[in-house]
Amino acid sequence: MYDPFSETIMALRPRVRRLISKHGNPIPRSLDELTLHGDEAPLSKTGMGSEQVEAIWRATRKLYRSGMSPAISLCLRRHGELMLNRSIGYADPQAQRIMTPDTPVCLFSASKVVSAMLLHHLVEQGQISLDDKVTRYLPAYGQNGKGRTTLRHLLTHQAGIPRPQEPLETDILYRPQEIIDILCAAKPSGLNTQAYHAITAGFILGAVVEAVTGESLNATLDRVIRQPMGMKYFTFGKTGEERAVDVSTGVPLKLVDLFLNYAVGGSIDEVVEVTNDDRFQEVIVPAGNLYATAEEASRFFQMLLNNGRYGDQQIFQPETVARALEPAYHRPRFDRTLMLPLNFSSGFMLGNRGMSMFGPGAPEAFGHLGFISIYCWADPQRDLSGALLTTGKGIIGPHLPALLGLQHTINRHTRLRRA
Image 1 (spheres, one colour):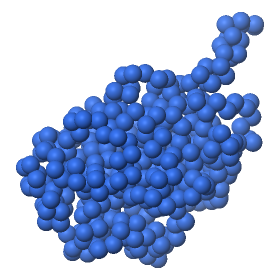
Image 2 (cartoon, rainbow, N blue to C red):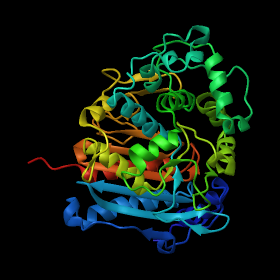
Image 3 (cartoon, one colour):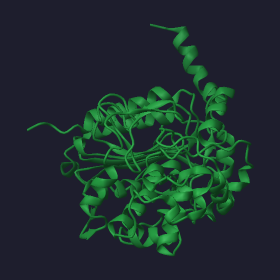
């Protein structure tokens, strides 16, 4: 039966997408020309059927068709095997460079888990304790009443790091030592208060690692994780032109920019401009500029799921991983920055029985969100590790139902059957 309303809506969809998505590339009827597959294991090794895997990929394609992200890369491991390793879209929309599974993407705040594990490595080596005061390693941090702040406070977002009283120029991100000096001189807003530190705590924690080891954070990362695990990328910055370009998308709303300025210190446009600048590759932002492929991020979380073991190497001791994942409190607390009930460990966001950052019904999941719809995680209940990397940066838009649908589809189809 002819339905003129439905036909009109279908005709308008491309126009709406072009208005919402600044990358402006048309979404073809067939996405095959924009889709690339990496290595994937035989399904028999993953415990998945082809219909289940294709249901997950259909949900991913639906997310792409929302028009909010020029590129998406998804890697899922189940039972330690590569179940799905694919990309779709443009790594550089203007140049129409196709995204591949081997394209590195900025993980933004998902970088925090890697910095945190380097700190936990120092605990494992007996060089520090999480309950040490920050001033033991950075004496200048004790200014204006911050002398009682511990490393654990920083890792669990309870250090009361204040937001700048006056707007800072975005270029300061390319001068990390200035940021550290500002944070050392700042007056805390309240110790033991749950308030997500988007980027600030990372500079202090990174400085602690460098003070203890006597080497750069990238050198420690290279020695402890990157080289032993055979990563090509997985570095703070130091990534070439092959990296994906981030794009500001979504419905432009003043309220959204006000929230992001409050939460992360800048609007979407400002964050995207800073991170696409070549200078962003020359600095270390411990909570914000780790570059990795989706497969590398999934590999890292699979190692954690395997109690710190990768192949025949013990990257972290099992007790180190367990300590890193221990909840900071018994139930989610309302976070005064993100305005959501959240549960953290010393470096990770944790799942819960209802909705969480990692979809519904994932109480044992752990990982981290990255600006704005990057997810890196593992879920022991499903024997699953994964990374969903997107380059479109927008909060309000048509992608929201598709994103929630993808999370639901992944969790539904990877649930382990009870014996």
